[in-house]
Length: 292
Ligand code: NAD
Image (tube, rainbow, N blue to C red; front, side, top):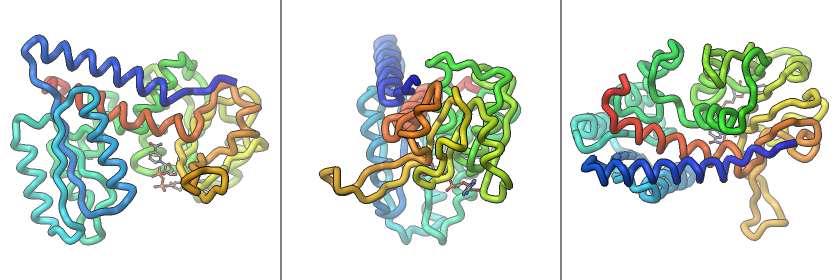
């Protein structure tokens, strides 16, 4: 079994980006600049945005964090998005999701200039992804592709089963694994909460990508020997063995499933760190306005 070390791979990518930024600046170019909008003080969103801003600074990007109270009007938020769209110094813009219930997330996502949409959530960029055209790929699926690529895992002709069909992970992942690309060229089965006989399907997977948000859902009896496991899930559970009183679990029962796996991502330290690295990669690309 080979552990797919997302933490190390993400650090390698960040170091590569830092070198590229230093070269860009040495050549008289401008530093990539990412703007992030955070609405409200939700703990998880605050943590994620802070981690993204910190990562930007670490690789030499400029960053701007715009904060609004949870009761900000949709109109005011849309005006800020427009202001950032029109600011030629800012290359990439992300609006941290979820947004409060009174704000239409799709409307805000659609207001972002697709050329600055480094989260890859704009319908225009999702369309370009489906058509296999140059675009910003959503960060978590892009991070999984990068791991498969860097560990030289053969995907062509393999049966890839994806559990979960969210817009940010499962659905784009299924499209990317089926594209005529490397990694890609898989025969893909996308499963979800209405899927019947899930175990019969997962047992035929060469590559199993799990993103449903239920701790240790995938057990050893659900996979075949030699499977490659990508565990996207993150669930915080109480623990009396850690200082904080919490620990993170993936969607896969790691101890038993790893024994049957050829490759497996740990949680934490697998897919999670790759997500931020891919956001940085997208932001670096966004400085090149010739992406499409
Ligand atoms: P979501 O919560 O939006 O959707 C869950 C999906 O799982 C749905 O499509 C649903 O149909 C499916 N599902 C639920 N129960 C099922 C069952 N019994 N059998 C089969 N399918 C079932 O999902 P999400 O936003 O993609 O998040 C999934 C997990 O991944 C969460 O734990 C989340 O925290 C984590 N996540 C991690 C990262 C990262 O960077 N590592 C990024 C995004 C999400």
